Amino acid sequence: VAATDPEGFDITYTYDTSPSNQAQATIVNNNDGTFTLTPSITEIDAGSFTFRAKATDGIHVISTTTTAALSFTTPITFTTDSRMNEMTLSFGSNPTTYKDGFIFTGDTTGYNWTNAVPSNTLSAGKKYFEFIWSHYSGAWAESSSGMIGVAGSDQTQFGFGMEDGSHTYTLDTGKIITKTNGTVTITDIGLGAPVRESDVIQFAYDSATGELWINKNNTTWWPSDPASGSGAVYSTNSVPPVIFAGSRSSNVISFGGYFNVGNDVVYTPPSGFTAH
Image (cartoon, rainbow, N blue to C red):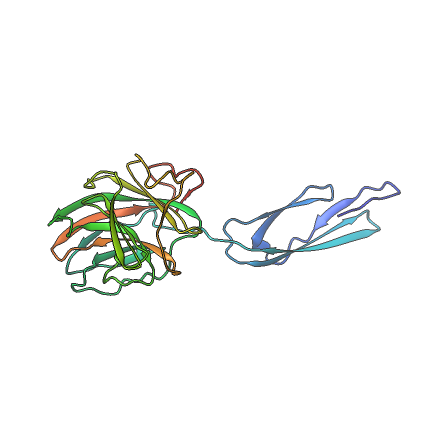
């Protein structure tokens, strides 16, 4: 509020304590004609914030009104321990659980399959999360194994992770299966196999570029360092991605693990990335 008093009287600065959308910001009166407005980090509403202030010497009053357009995002909330609950995935029962773009699906080969399309997708931005393996049993072969990866949110459980745009990390072989325009490619990404109990599979992705990076136990990122190098392009279509874990086996497979997200990740996210 630009105010001067030629007669030298003290000027008092005040502001409206009930502006529009009060919860959207905190206000500090600096008592010098300036005010500091700090947007709320938890407010979910978007819109405009109207701020009214005035200066007075007891006789004269100068008022000002400022309207600013504001938008806010709400951080994703997870279970109390900031991770997905452990799920046991077995052929036949085909459990399906999903939350905030992470999905657990049972057998994906079509045997007793059910639709497994999540209701929402991954957070936008440059994000990092982990998958921690807990146990497995039953038949275990390259054609009959657990897998985790990224797939389009329009896919169903039948063939999940095996359609165009998918990147699937096989837990028994440590290889990546990709499918682009109908062509399947299997790549050894050099992280070692099989995945053992308590191994930490690390993922970094950039939703703006559609790139994905994978690591295990904080050794060497594939295909390059996310902080400085290009990732594998994980989608050839326009649908948002989801991260999934499941079995591509027609035999009885039982395994478990959990997606580790939030502030309790085991390893520090790559430079420029934040925990999902």
